[in-house]
Picture 1: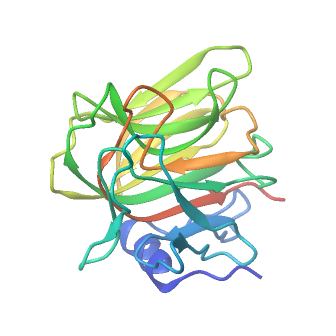
Picture 2 (picture 1 turned 180 degrees about the vertical axis):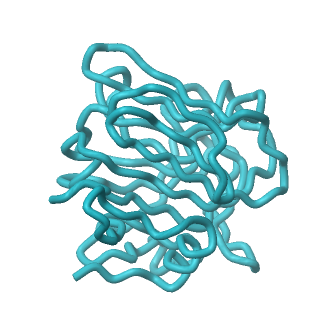
Length: 226
């Protein structure tokens, strides 16, 4: 049985219609976190038996521990990062249709070439990452085992300080970005090659690829039959 935190469920209901499989059945996330909840310096999973997120940094001296905003969510700045795992999950782990939902607010440009909102990938081999570039566009980098990447970018730059509910859906034919419940951009793209490993929030692999902003919830949802 899958258990959802109230904040994750509210975010999904407020931002988008509940995802459904091709056969019309409702589906629920198999990885999800409410970043307004902090216990012993970890963010517990809101899915039963899910892996929690822990604080890590590769910056020296290390940045302050991320803070919880009064209106919800965790603030990331200049290298604060949460580290977790998406091992053995249907969808991202077996390259069947899946989607990712992220509720966030950008508060400043990234420190480097881009800033990582969410990353679960082997570069140019498998998985994906969601980043904000210096142009403030939200881009999904989609990796396949042929060593090539496909890029899905928002139609316009994000507005600093504006809350966004972003959803990227991979159905096997297209990758589609939704912002605040509305289709924003779509490209022809296969599902990212299967990835089963670690994930990062607030940073992407690269030189100062730090996201500067608040992330409230993240959910990964398989949309194909098990």
